[in-house]
Length: 239
Image 1 (cartoon, rainbow, N blue to C red):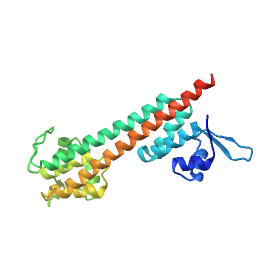
Image 2 (image 1 turned 60 degrees about the horizontal axis):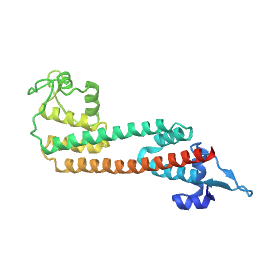
Image 3 (image 1 turned 90 degrees about the vertical axis):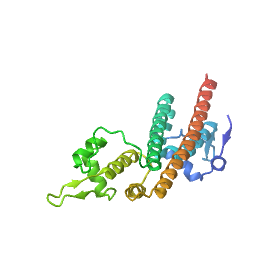
Image 4 (image 1 turned 135 degrees about the vertical axis):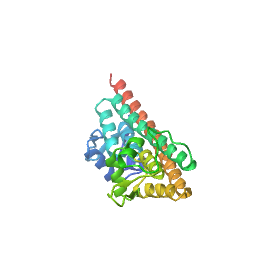
């Protein structure tokens, strides 16, 4: 198996030698042997680990990357792949909800299939039941300025109308996606003012971001497969 100096690995992977030492200190890369002069002696296995880490960090984040690479290091490759499978399923859900949001924005008069009947004026309890959203979530969105229900002048209770129902449905589809609060506010306000062009642009940008993450994740999975193949080949050579 080929042997590399730290600077050689750093140039191939595109990081500094100090970054290589950081990865080592986290315990997610096998400790290398040393040359007589004390320098680290990296192998093809280490190169595969570093390539894998570089691809995974932007695709899956530091926490999941560490878990996956530790699984592989500890010989549990199947667990590593199931972790990534779950992340991919979550990303697929994000895309689905973003697509639903875009459909609502493109067709503002689209009939809504709901549990109950939309009345001219509704209480928070009625709206919560119709939209299948907890009242506490609706109150939180109101606190964030995402929805602005009217108030009954006599008792101070919130009054919700059909526009609020559509806004809540949009928020329900967006809350587990990549949308930030400001983007969510822009989208629901656009629905309220019947001007959805900017909101559609935000949703389309979010969908492109999801697609970019999907491409990054696919590339990272490819590097994980390469790493596993190198490890498995080394194990076979040891027999």
